[in-house]
Length: 282
Image 1 (cartoon, one colour):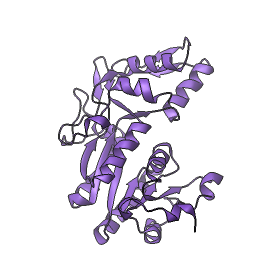
Image 2 (tube, helix red, strand yellow):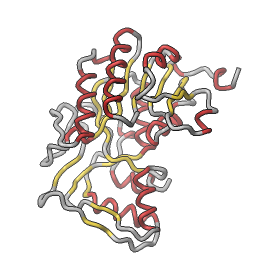
Image 3 (cartoon, one colour):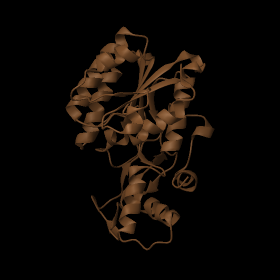
Image 4 (cartoon, rainbow, N blue to C red):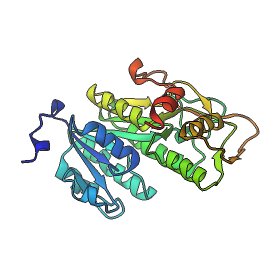
């Protein structure tokens, strides 16, 4: 028996992370695996995941989620999966059926984009969702599916732009700087942000406390996208990058998810400056 299986896990919770090989999913896995009996899925073959007995190969477009759920029998499913939109919808339909029949709850990583049709103000947990983007509409469709479940069966975690040392956004910015390519900024976009580190701590807290419902997991304050990216670039190094300013409207527009009803403890709240100071290059 491996050392991992000998551990006495907190509360005996068994967790399955769908999309456990992606940036957010794998960050959550690393945060939880020492505390809970944690499993993840991967799709593209990588030897590190193939050799890890806690990971299962799962292709949404080909594999039936039921067989994986019956194999793992999780108490908690965390959905951080990406990929084919139709396959995502079908997988979550099957997950909701599983949740009704078993002692299990789902934590669904959603997005600020469920509000991207509302540009004049930030959005709160109980605001009506409306999106102009295909991605936002996908998240809304899955959210609406989950909102029909008993509340104790699910949590919807709406997340703004995620940054962090290994994040795709920071990697892309570094690549553009080094290749002398323009870094895209949106001067009129007001948003809040988060980091993978902070997001995973918040997810850990919600699981520990058996929290359910709708949560907005971003910085408690807002910043212009251009200002934020410029400060991030300054932290990366002494560069003089080219900025490509993209104006989608003539007026300021918001893409921010702020908490009002489901606030987390102060130690789990952060400002956008905290993200820059402690999480971008940590």
